[in-house]
Length: 445
Image (tube, rainbow, N blue to C red; front, side, top):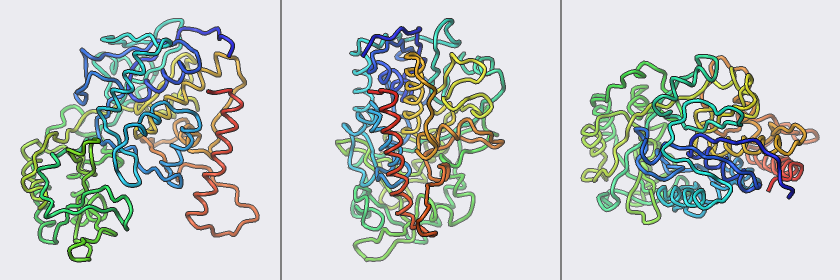
């Protein structure tokens, strides 16, 4: 490949999106500068000095190519997504989902960055404004460090920041009462989940105590709206006595092998690492005080004597009202030299954040080599995310991969009523063809 004449490229933030953007451009032979505050300055949600840290669930969601999340992964695989490769390398059993050993994942990403000759790393850097005469990619994540958040509205030109969410607790595997739990997945699938059943009486006591439990005061962002995609379990419980049974505690398709019957409610645990020495409580993002988490979650029979090695925490998650300020490439409409990527840009989820970093990298690459304008077709999941973040929306909220945001598939000369599986297969086939052609046209490696 001919050497490209390139401007200075500054990627600010080495989270999932920033790491993917840097590694993707470096693979094309483009030199980048990567800036991060670690290891000396960390947000309230970060604990490791490594980059691309996983701070909430360790799940990268469904791996089936016929699911929306699986379709996104298949498109990223075609485009040689670096972080998705690493995620598969350090995956832990999670049935049909892709879950990772979070420490190993971050360690591998960090080593790849440190050992890449095309990446110049600047650590302990508190960058709060764009570099002049450079292409800037702000991939600082949903928890901007001190100084930057106050500058963002100035950079964006509008007051468009909002959002917060919560993370779930983790328990020591050996402390779970296996006499009151069983392995299995819904309808016999995803067999790597540990199920903790509850009777009607146990469930009702649990919900009552959950609603009475003392919460952490949310200070400056306590009055903001809760994002449904990452709702604290106590908020969901407050929406009705059976809301948890139709949500994260749904027993449907999870019969107890001891009785052959479905329990009244089921709490699911998922392995947190390859050693399987700890489990995360699925869907248990929470803002309860630590002592209250121990008291209330121990009411789950299998967790009566559970040892909590990490409690759930509520933390500020800032995101940009993207349609007001972005084009379809996650670039500011008013300044072509400033891009945003990651959850701050209005996508929700690990894989979606990685995808945004890759999208920005591809646009910068195409721009440097003087290629024709391109766009991701909205018949692909990547293209649908691009379309979502720049299309007018008066009630914009962060969005994950789902079929609801995709363009309809071509169904001429086909039955009017297609099954869900048939539609998914058609979408998959069409998206693979489109992404492969785009990769070839861009000469993307």
